[in-house]
Amino acid sequence: MSPPPASEQPFEEIIDTLRAFLRGSRLPSVSEVAQRMPDPFHILVSTMISLRTKDEVTSASSKRLLARAPDPKKLAELSEAEIAKLIYPAGFYNTKAKNLKSAAKTLVSRCGGRVPESMEKLLELPGVGRKTANLVRNLGYGLDGICVDTHVHRIANRLGWVQTTTPEQTESALEEVLPQKYWIPINELLVRFGQTLCNPVSPVCSRCPIYEHCPRIGVKRSR
DNA sequence: AAAACGGGGGC
DNA sequence: GCCCCAGTTTT
Image (cartoon, rainbow, N blue to C red; front, side, top):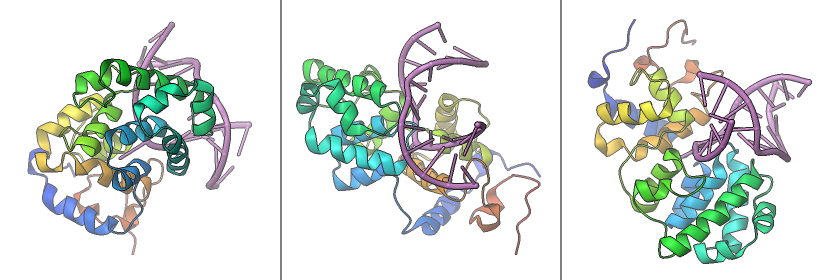
């Protein structure tokens, strides 16, 4: 059966169900940082480290680097080699070290030593794309904008909320259909859901709390 | 649109 | 051994 049009999705019910289901489950690494230290710079650094890297590694690497460089000025003073060593074994550590140092220098020289709020300014930082910029705005400044990572992209399509091929298409399509009050929380919810049950390769549909809202066919719920 | 960046852990 | 991982940039 085809999914109901996105405009008729019972978003409130689905999201409430997800919230209840995920209550008590572990937070993704960047949200952890946001809870511990809701500082835009800390969000930026841990998000840059998190790209294509598992949560546990991201968390440990972020802690080491931020303990040593808690602000843009301190980070800009570290060498690329020092940064690379601190964030190892996060993936792409050499590229990330270069981007982190370069971004920190830009923050000091052109942004008054602070992390900018505007999408435009954030996107000028090396190594910062729409996903990272939106997450910094969401968690660091409480500003709207849907942060689309692979989990949000995959699950929004699985659930029939959007039909898109690129994350950027998902971002604009989701903003068309999803009530604005969910723009910030949707990311963490779908990431947590996507890291466990609704994972990329073998989603555990038999235990899915929102199974009845999912249009996937050929998957039977088992007792 | 596809490739490159990249080491660690799961299977 | 081969796969993936809170993506971004370059070709």
